[in-house]
Image 1 (cartoon, rainbow, N blue to C red):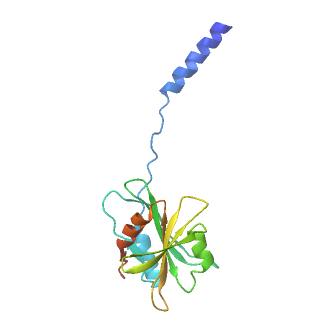
Image 2 (cartoon, helix red, strand yellow):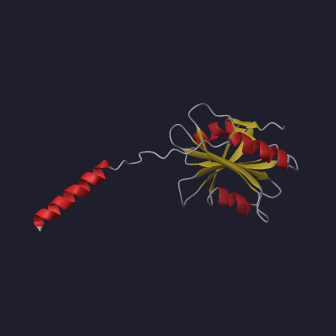
Image 3 (cartoon, rainbow, N blue to C red):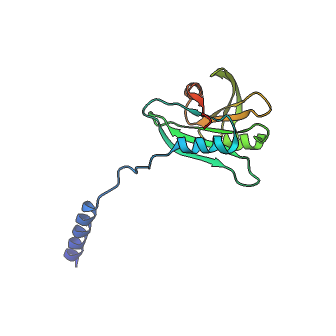
Length: 169
């Protein structure tokens, strides 16, 4: 009986050793350009997107337009050093304090900084590792922009520097 158990265990271990293992899950490329152009065309908003150097990977892009919700443009990236950074934009008339709080994971104020010719409010979440920069554009139809991620504030400020307007078609 002991010998048969040893033989069975050896067979199971040999079989497990032969089964291939996934080392990395490859995610399909995210088409940020088409989502950005769609949002620009549908809303008329002067949205921005980052023009990033090689090595950055877009992880998601969407336009949240559910009835009763704040309509918002979102795109997320992984930096070459593995930090997650995202941009969310909504019309300032609809970007409520609650919406900003959700995007910043209830971030608490840590002052301000200047980047890309704008003043940004710095917010840090106490619940998770997340820092955010929040800025509201000028004019009645300005956009509230929230930059968030696991990156430190200097990297978020550099991310802000890369923001360029999405061209109108």
